[in-house]
Structures are given as structure tokens and as C-alpha cells.
Length: 330
Image (cartoon, rainbow, N blue to C red; front, side):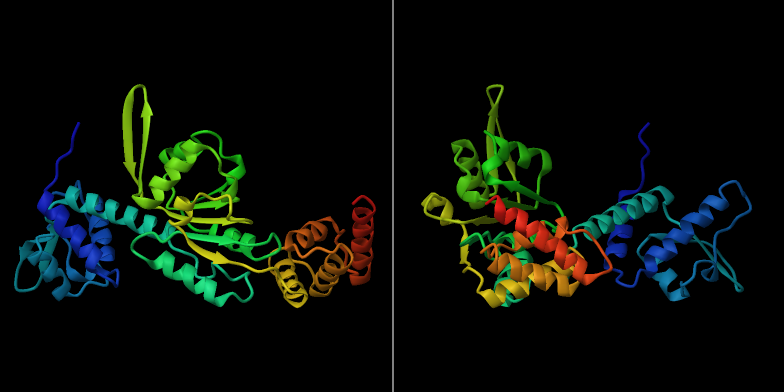
């Protein structure tokens, strides 16, 4: 059974809800709905008065009457009573408004998106500009393994409606299936230089250029329009096709200096892994000078293998044991 409602009242209600930044209209109409429900079997109910739907002032209710969301159901020298002009229309508008609010909240970009990354304020600025742009600006991070590329991708994977994929793991038509089934707003590709399947490359080129992906199935051609930002990383760019490179804003990263590596590793271990700062610094120094690595991920791996203890020295000794085993089997 299809339940009909007044389209004008629905549109007027939704418009009032969207334009009201204080939430007053929403609270009034929610209370009004509740009063209608409580009095649906009361044939003597003449409607509600202004004080029954706080925080309503008579002027606000009169404005809703002028917009034909409410109607005056009774008026005398002592009181004015109101009812919803069309209860079903107002209910529907409230439901749709709440769904919009939920979607907006779900898609809100975290304000602390890049909190775990030390420095690189200029790169963060470029990303924020891209994220706030009305149209996609695709960004490629490239450079040696031991740089901040992975940290940026880790942060970006927190974005709402984002999908993270490894270029080396994309099977034939994998990108097409992902886009049609998940419809991500942000597509994050690690190791994009390892995407070598022509069908995936063709789809990616089209997505980044026009937002359209086409696929042929059962002798029929399907096309879909997407608004998707592509953020990617690569260790090398010489294997990336020139036509794909041209669609990116490339940002080159350099290998960490010793000082930068220690600082970044300590920051990551304390903020993300919850490691004691003294132990974090000890592990970072050991990874750098004993293992000869400038990869922050090596610090994370070792920190996770170290046994938790209240004694700082015991954890340092355990870190030595882990590193000694790794060194022996290199």
C-alpha cells in the first residue's frame, strides 16, 4: 500500500530543516509529532500550544504556519492551538533530514587526520587543499622505502568512504569490481607502480580523467559516473605509464636523515603503539645503527615483539634479544 502525502508540505518542511542552523525547527517538529501520536485517539484534542513544544516562541510557530508546515487548528482570545498541516509529509521530511545528517557525520573528515605525522606541513597543506576541493585532485607520493609515504597513506585510510588497495594485489578487473561494488570517494593505492594489468590501468585512467568507468558484460556495455579522489604511492615512477603520471600531482619524498628517523619513529611508537618514550627511542636507535634500517615499519615490528613490562630495562633487554635474533638470521 502506497501512503501519499502533500509534496508541498514535504518540500517546505525539508527546506526549513536544512536552513535552520540552531536545530530549533527540528526540535519543534519532533515534539509536535510526539503530541500527534499521543493524541491520535483523542477526538477532543484541538492541537498544541506554543509552550508545549519548547523552545518554540509564538513567532516561530507563526512562521511555520506561513510556510504551511503548521496550521492553526483553534484560536480564541486566550489561546492559539496548532497542528501539523500534513503529519505524513512532516514525518517523511524529518526522516530524510536525519538520514542526510547521518551521512554528513559519517563523511566528515577527521580534523586530526595527519596528527601522527611529524613535519611535512607543506605536504599536509596540499592534501587538505585537495580534500576541500569541489573536484578531485589526485596525488602521487613517490620516493625511497624509508620515507613518510606509508604514514600518509595510513592517515588517508581513515577517510570516510575510503578503500585501500595494493597495486600488486589487483587482479584482472579488480579495480572495476571495487568501484562498482563499493563506490569509494577516496581510492588509496599503495605500490601503484606494480599495477600492470591493462584493464585495471584503462579503468584507472578513465576514472581519474572523466570519473567514468565502463565495462562490458553479457554483450552489454555499462557505464557509471564517480566522484573519486585517487591518492597513491610508489617507490619508483619510471614504470608508471606517462599518461597515468600526467593525471597525478606528484610529490617526491626523500629518505629520512638519522635525526628525522629517530624523531619520527619515537613519535609513531608512542602515539600509535603506546610504547614508553624511553623504550621507543632505544628501539629506534637500535634499528638505525644495529640493523642499518631507516624504515619506521621495522621499529613497529620490533616494538610489537618486545614483552610488556613495568621495568624499562627489562623491555630494553628484550628488544636487544629480538634484534640479536634478527641480526643473526639476516
